[in-house]
Length: 193
Ligand SMILES: [Zn+2]
Image (tube, rainbow, N blue to C red; front, top):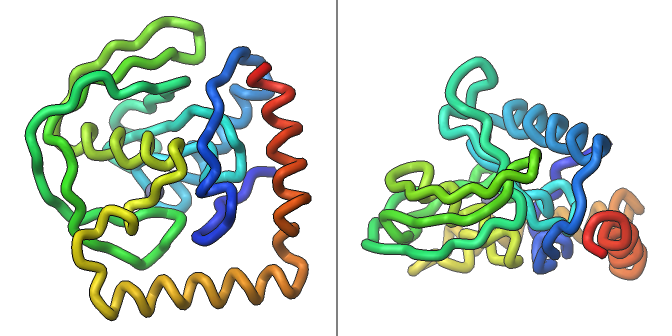
């Protein structure tokens, strides 16, 4: 059963590795990721947000199960990015925190679909922002890294996440770094060899 992880869980800082295979179990993982994304009212979710070190993310700009389009990007690469635009962002791995983030206005993304088809998409607007946010995740980058001026309130919120994480670790709810690294390696052996 997949679970959403929150900052500062180490897998959020792990640069995801490209997939070399797809199987039925991965399809089920993606279905579960959509369930988790909708449940938390998100519009995008990267695999490392559910503790998987794999280079894939999902998105649905409407954030609603019954509308919009469910997009799956395997091994995404942003090939071209143009323009600049600032807008407010949040993240399911830092619930409750928001801030203005500068992104490119339009991006061209190359990826693969679950059935092995190449995706070449030129997008702008909200979906372009989602794609940049999610590709950042896959590179181990969080939107808080891109906040121009965090300010004391954001710093306070971040400290709160860190304190809570430390407590969860003490209580044994989250495995230690070595165990997490072993878990990630199992996934890499399965999908990225
Ligand atoms: Zn996020």
